Length: 227
Image (cartoon, rainbow, N blue to C red; front, side, top):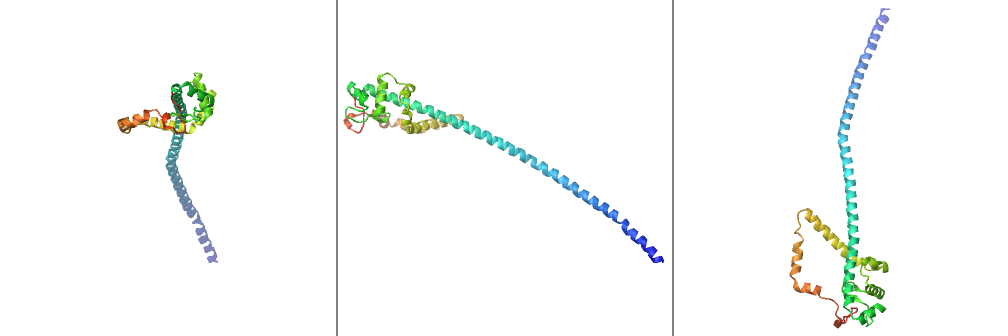
């Protein structure tokens, strides 16, 4: 009879050990949670500067794109203005050629847009002109209209006719001007001079460039005859 009674306390002792184990488990679990929480805070501190740098880079990229777009728009505006300036220069040269013609030669261009020999007019500044443009420009010269805005009113397609050559020449001038301005800002204003000096010494080449191209004695396809 005594054995069953004595066996009960032993089972009670085994049940009393369970809370201690639970406490240890709870303590370990809490330690693990604290470690995870601390690690998460450290990771969050490491990520924050990366986010800030990324935002700054995005802002810098946006500012760079806007500045690049502004500069390109300014360059295109300069090219358009330079095209008009070049065309005005070419018209001035053409009108000087008209002025040097005899009344009969100029009258032929004014009436038909061609020379007395029936050829298309060829200008040293504007090249070969189709009869309609030559006739209209001769009319503008006769009426004393020499400025480009007024001529464009009468010949709205004039810029388009010479657009390719004008765009190429205007782009070269503008890019050269921008490069020179950039060099001046960088303190290198003398860099472009060595290229110009050899040209100045070539007397024969420069004289050929200045010499008028109109020479009726040579024949050719289309030249403005002189009086």
